Image (cartoon, rainbow, N blue to C red; front, side, top):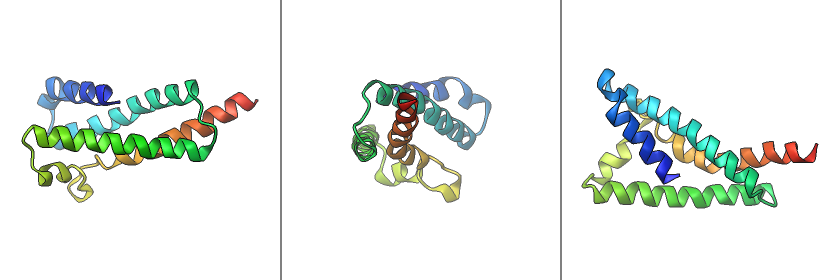
Length: 121
C-alpha cells in the first residue's frame, strides 16, 4: 500500500497539480488513492480470505496503524511539522485525506463480505 500511495502522490505532483489548484489536486489524489487501494485490498482479501469478519476488521486496524506510522514517520522525516501533517485531515478546509484511514479500516471488511458471498454461491 505505501508503494501505491507514493506512486499516486508522484503522479499528482508531476502531472496534474500544475493544471489546477492544490486543494483540487489533493481531493482528486485522495479519491484516486481510495480507488487504487480498493483494487489492491480486494485482491489481497480475495487471495488470503480472512476466517471471519472480525478478522477482516482487525486486518484493517493493523493496516491503519502501519499506514499512520508510515505517513507521519515519513512526513516528519521530510521536515514537515505535526501541525502541517494534521492539516491534511481538516475537512473544514476541504482536506478529505481523513477518508484514507477510514477506508483502510473498513475496506478489508467490505472486501471480505463481498468475496465471502461470491465463494458461497
